[in-house]
Length: 266
Image 1: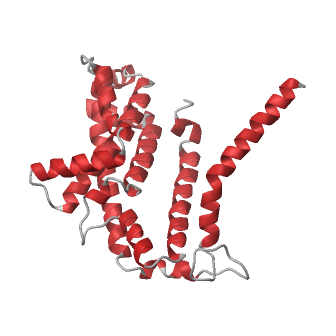
Image 2 (image 1 turned 90 degrees about the horizontal axis):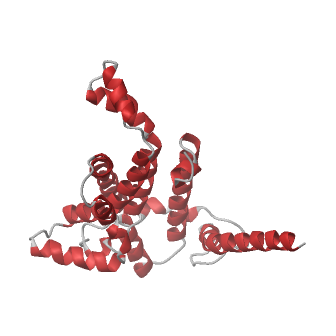
Image 3 (image 1 turned 90 degrees about the vertical axis):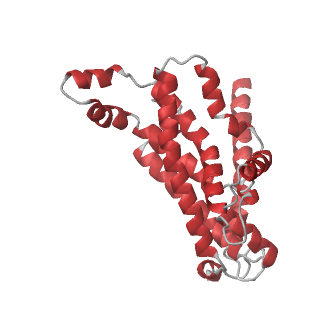
């Protein structure tokens, strides 16, 4: 009887936690269909007009384009640098390898506001005042830890003797890497890309210090919309972003598996 009560309490706790996490998102989704121009749950019918207004928001396409550019480029650079760093730590037998691995993920340990202020002051000291390159470097700093940590976990399970075996069978070193290492690490690459891009695309506390009047990422632009003309269009835009994230998770589950993405299964 006591074991059954314990299981029931565990399920109740899980359901309560899920409800606590999902409820705000459900409210945003419901608000996006409101027929009234206020943030309110729909009553008396549903409306899609706020979704139609997303593309007409002032500066929306420029902000979306900037977020995609910064997100994709910083993720690509992080994949290259983070993978090379992870290989060096795993295979280089470097002194202080554990300290280097901790250093790579250290930006995640700092509050975003603190990191944003530090980057702003640092860029000013070296004379970097242009918003675009400053944003790229800052987003590289916040995406690199996701890539490095994921690739370190993936490389820890990879047998490097397979590369040497491919070379003894006639493959060049680049060919062995392309045919053996990259396919084996594909789940790690996908996971690193997924989390790094989302970390960049959704970043607000660091970007707010580095944008200017003409260069604003989508999260910063959304804050401006709230201050200037709040209406359910923002809820509709948030719902679209949420749907895109869920779609990426579904694709990740299909091609990689959520267990492997979470690092809980080989």
